[in-house]
Length: 354
Ligand SMILES: [Zn+2]
Image (cartoon, rainbow, N blue to C red; front, side, top):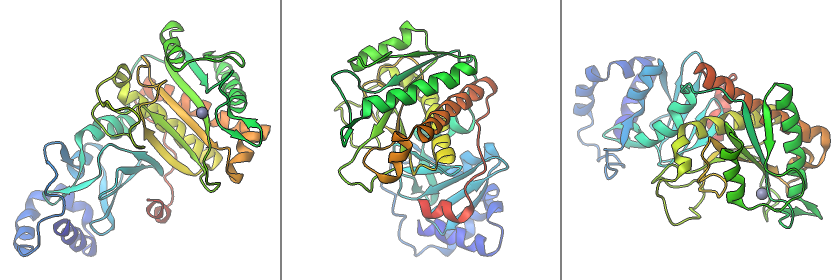
């Protein structure tokens, strides 16, 4: 940490920080010499086997690297993308959108590094989508239903509002020529595995479950999109299941992340939801889902700012449009191999968000 801080500080001051990354060999000797007395980096206890240098990884994308905060926050940018990595945090920012990962960014052997599994399940799938068959059938899953109302706020039930959002999302996607199936056509009670089992039965190409959040604190607000947690990895929220073993949903780890990112990007950009990020949890409708699958939490029923986005039709329809656009972005990404990214958030604010 100290080592890297010194290096970056020096090059930052000299205005050549981005050259540093392509000439790491030429600088390694003087750096070692001049930091002899420095204590070992804080993260030496981390097994280096899974960690890889972010700078080395970034070269294949032609990124330039800058320290936003010396030895603490690293920014990478190229013509299309801006990424930020904060040391000791399990959250990265991709074009202004937060993405939670399995292990914290660390300084390993003096280099800012990220776990290889997080590269494979978060960074690469979002920045460089793998082409696969196009999306023709979408399965939308309005949460809860029937005897399960979901969250409640002043007599209003989550199950009713997520159904309305799903119906509008369905209408918008049908306009684009997609076939859209709903897990429930009305106010039926439906189990979690029954929902995820429908993915195969309906020959869906992707699955999106739609929910609203609620919290005891009325200040909690914003949107988040969940994928199932990659095998072996820690969930963003404390794990609800004891097992971290591989499940069928993990076959689509990369596409899950891409789909979640595209939806979260539109929810935060179009609607202005507070960005709670792309998150990971072993949720019932996701763990065994055979197709790329995510669960959207579109705002808090218990927060004033979010309430209008849930309870007012004109605002709610915009949320549906954002979800539909995220799905369409995903479709385009798997057809072309290119992610849809808007212009990154302005430089100063990205840092504060971390
Ligand atoms: Zn719910």
